[in-house]
Length: 227
Image 1 (cartoon, rainbow, N blue to C red):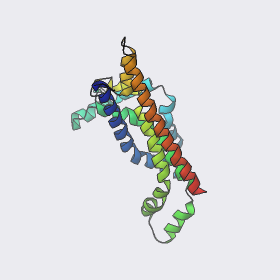
Image 2 (cartoon, rainbow, N blue to C red):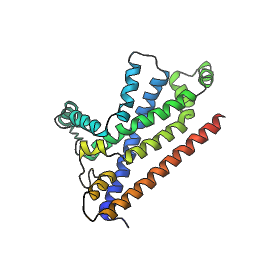
Image 3 (cartoon, rainbow, N blue to C red):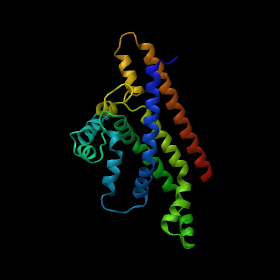
Image 4 (cartoon, rainbow, N blue to C red):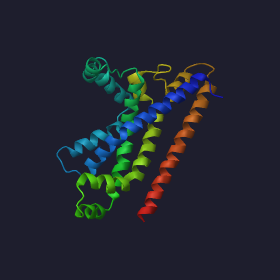
């Protein structure tokens, strides 16, 4: 049976992961479209920047977020002074950190789906008088939807397990930023709390495995539809 503290960590983790995934989807679709269809200067640089969180240590990513979006950072000062928005040491900052860490997985999944779309469908719609925006909304996007959903599930699982960037940027404040990984870390450091850590670790593993299984199922269904 989960304690109140563990339930709070679970609720916060699910909320942060859901919001991070939701706000990432539109930007990921636009970025994937630019990388798969665009021909512009700086395309390789954009591709590298998108995938940078996968190769950087999460603590480094969190530190860069703190230096940029913290109250003393250039963007953080601007957001606080003009809009009253504070990200560091807030749940909104946890959302930002989780979104950045899961973003490359989402972009990659959407990009692969876009590249698998038969361009003849788009050309046929265009020849019937549809403008490029309408073609994208009615033809391209529905065909890439399985990839979007699969990528969203992967990004959600990644956000759910994010620790290094989150704890560096927003710490582990109970009820505010103490997600499941942060709670597990705290229990590991507390004598006699191994049972709590084990319960949360098992719960986190089950959610992640379910997310990966769902993503794999969607990918296979998409492949079968293509064949």
